[in-house]
Length: 432
Image 1 (cartoon, rainbow, N blue to C red):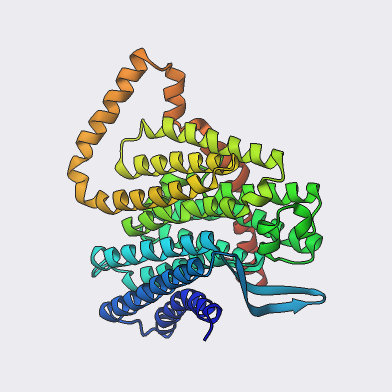
Image 2: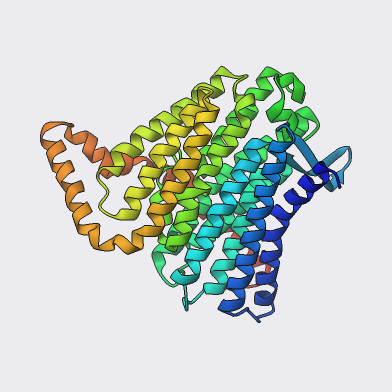
């Protein structure tokens, strides 16, 4: 068996392991025969180990073979006329590196979750949603076509919203999950627009042509078309990685279980947008306007998150805005072409925030001391360093939440309620 065949098999196992875990947990639950905690734990450990070992083997084989980019095709999802929707994986150092990072972090979070959620109502539901996330982030990491990327991107958002609303017996988690889901619609709509336009203009959804070509002409795009797709990708990243003006959903996402907060908003999900920009950097480099837009989004987000983090009085909110500061800096690094530094920054920050989020429940006794230090910095700064309006803006989170509510969240919720009433009308449920 050739090295390429072993590499392809390792890539397939990396994707197949979480998919099989999702089926193993989801099918019995659908049949109302959920597995026991012991079986769930065993299946998750086996899947996590297989995913990590397969991705690490693929990365080792890739580096040993010289490190050139490869595309492995598993055929087409389906064909429509002359358009084919390919099931491709793009294998290079960046994709495999992010896949190894994702599998390692998910394995750690899974081990932590077994103990943290032991005997918790919804234990089975949590691990089904967690398996869905592992599959989705793996698809994002290894996507070789815009169709695979869109599926992974969409599933990341769905699993994220479901886990934010995990404690659905309380009002706040459900309301925050719906708010996040509404904002994610903007991100996913931008990604869908980029996918449609790429197929329309280039005649293919191949990401190898789009992201690895030295010039936009290599992907069959004009300079103006490349700018449009770049801007749509930046908008998709802004919604998923909580860049301004969509930053307000990040602290609200902390309503979910601590392990999900760690893997989503400390380690992986919030960095998925950074990874996409890293992948798309060759495309962004062809457009000065796109690079400036990305740099402005990252810089303003970093400044905004830094100011807002200084006046938070709870651990998770402070950590979430601290994460957002670093994400903004990573976006700036990518926009100026420092891709190597940006990837190292991403890996280091993801591991560091994972540790902070997972250790947060064990250091709650330090909360009052942390609040005292935060309040002390605020009082001292308000008297002698910063103007009051700046602290007011920080306390109110830049007043962007109300703007996003009125322009994105509330219209989406009204549309959803209207569609629900229309569906009930069609079903004859007049009085409900």
